[in-house]
Image (cartoon, rainbow, N blue to C red):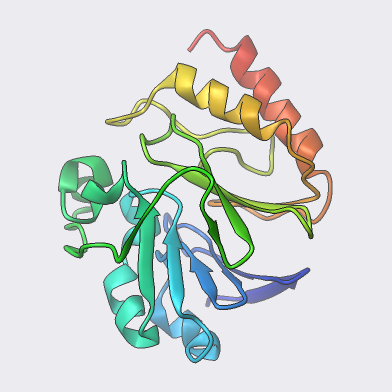
Amino acid sequence: MTKNYYLMSVHWIRGEGYFANSYVFGSVLVDAGVSPVALKPFRDDIDTIILTHCHYDHIARVKEISHLCEAKVCIHKDDAGGLVDETPSLALMFGERSPGIVPDRMLSDGDIIKDLLVIHTPGHTPGGICLYNKEEKFLISGDTVFSDGGYGRFDFPGGNADKLKASIKRLSSLDVKALYPGHGDPMSSGGSENIGMALSMIEMSSY
């Protein structure tokens, strides 16, 4: 059964099985792999869906959720193709098909949506992004970094180890208190230290 958690001003909706976590911040839903039923308490609030990248476990229910909430769908321009193409979305690995929708907005590095700064963090996918709120010092990190000092895979189509390392290095310059990853439990403090761990790990890796 899906549980909702409240950390600071971000609501965590735990991903079930291989599906990714989703987060609600104000009127924004980040990632859409969770069941639409889990979003019923937020149905009247959500007007924007931001996808951190195009992998199926993060986008599986975006079509249904966007209709349910009458929300605009946003994704980085370099990952938009995954919403209609099974190769970049990895949908066939899950025995599924891509949602088959066109995003309402293509995102670029430096965009700001509802107090969330879009940071382009390629490496896991070409158009992967993280979302940073400077006021509350939280980072929604998708599959770029996780809350155990880990980082995303780069052996899928479009992945690139050097770009991922550069992306994590860029994140290490941010002042991050709370970290909200695509998988696993969020952490309410120590985000910057965790990102530093991930950077050290990938720098020591021989790929």
